[in-house]
Image 1 (cartoon, one colour):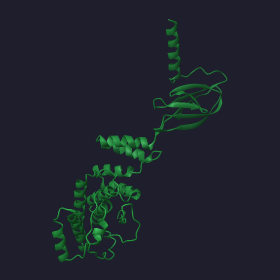
Image 2 (tube, rainbow, N blue to C red):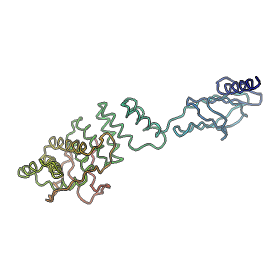
Image 3 (cartoon, helix red, strand yellow):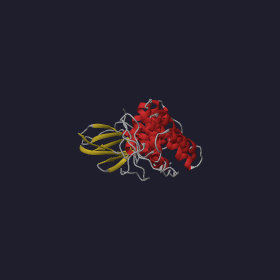
Image 4 (tube, rainbow, N blue to C red):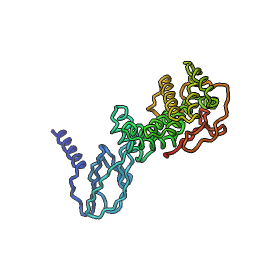
Length: 324
């Protein structure tokens, strides 16, 4: 019976501490009530842990530092307060989740197919404090593309490519949304960039295309019939032949189809921000050809000249034009 009475008294004290009930304030003291919607949030007053939210406290009048912490997922809350004798001050704390925690939940929602929730969580993660995963713009762009918002998706994929220009899948998705926006030349540039960054030696294959003549077209069409790497090289060169000829729509479609077929062959998930260097190395043709003269600003970018800065896979970065 005595043990039960002690236990009941302890429970009563705990319940009193964890309610918003106003306590009787001694004449020379003050009261602080701290509330927080995060379960188990720890409360520190003047660097001393005093309990978990919600919590009523009797304190000395004057200035105090109130700190509320809820683990690694939330940014700690710190506020300096001043209470007068006999005063009851309510400190309502709203903890902000950190970017890594929001990103993790967004990825879970994305994998579960809940695109609307994933979009909201990625948007929150992009604005939240804490170290933000750099590929957030890629997934935001992917979700905007799925939601049929190509202009928003284009802006987000460009933001991602500012972080990692050599993302082959990022260039590919940029091409898809620009194609939806009827930006043929820019879509062509993005698809070609996806190949350059995704497949080693594509750059050399493009430079060895040869002149935009009918005789060269016939040669490339015959070589493109092969199913080995030489056939892939010829199909890349054939797409570039149409670009040199000024048939940008045909070149765009061929570069897109090439990247998609190689992705299937390689088992690459295009909905992930793959870096450069997909697992195929192309052996370029041996007949070199000078690069075409400079193209007008509204045409697809030519193959970048040698001597430019190169990413880790050794291919010079093609220009990624901004929104026209």
